[in-house]
Length: 156
Image 1 (cartoon, rainbow, N blue to C red):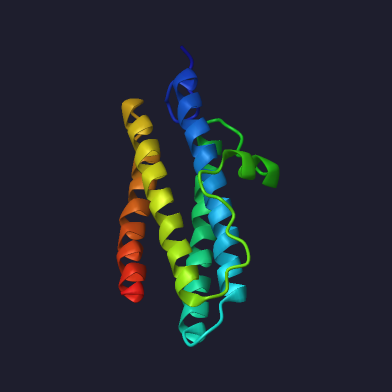
Image 2: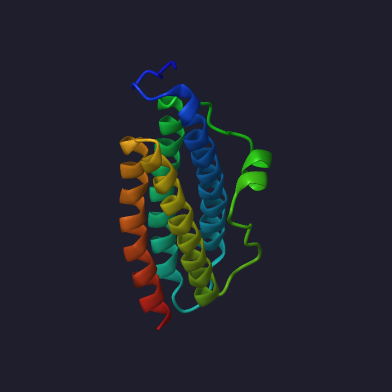
């Protein structure tokens, strides 16, 4: 068998690459949702939520880039068309949301979906001895679990 540039079996990495491209798609749709919450939130918590949503989508931008770069590191090609993202995402578009609590519920739901998907990606990566991918998504899960708790605390 042949290996990729980091010594992992090329044939085995196709499963991880596919999982990462699905995750990349979910991240993009969630990112777009959070940008919408940031732009459109209204109400008494506008200032605090507007700022929090900006922090979140800025973090998502970095993670999107890291996931795409991991796909490249494994020898794959990251998805990059909106139609691919829409088709492969486990997160749905959330349109016309304005009320603060509804936006926060969308954030919590999106984070929970990412966490579940990343746990699956980590499992696939672990089974193929791809420690780099498993560690990458495990760090995201840890951070996002705390965010779920914090956003749920806001909701009461």
